Image (cartoon, rainbow, N blue to C red):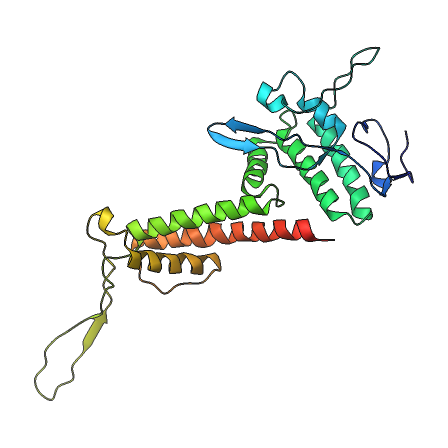
Length: 276
């Protein structure tokens, strides 16, 4: 069918199939429109616990995820297509589903429903990430996977904040163990003794910070406070001014690169969920 200028009001689209329709980007959704949702469920993949995040979905995604080609745990909760007379039609794959989500997202955006548009944007990105038959190279799929894992495509603030907390904790421990010197270096002045009345030239050097002692002696409250100050300043692109070892310099540089990105993703996710 041609959905151009079609208006649906108070419609249950839980089992509606959109594949094959035209001009879905011009569809208007008014009133209380109901879509299918992701099933509640968890899975463990490579030792990492995962769960389905609640969002709006299309019936076609339910049908595709319920195919026998997927693992039983990944199929759990997804609704297979209802058997109908005639030839069995395979549900559309990720490329077609991504196009459907992309077109229908505009219907939510035109209706000023930003949370609904965000759910369909997530569905589109999920289909792009799971599309293994397209010409997209592994680098692009890896980038999408990282974007999904770190912040749920910029839509899951809790995920980004969790990663930020883990990164800051790891950085604090690294700074305590390898970044902070045992004692702050003190300036050292050297020169040549001159006869009375002659000009004296002195050179003041700052010795390189040195770290000594076994690792268990480095985990103290005072060092934890210094390390926390270094990390908090790194999150907002500031230098703490604290003396650190060579290893601590590289740890701080990595922290100033990674942690502000995670903070920005968390802010972006919060903005995406509350925007109207």
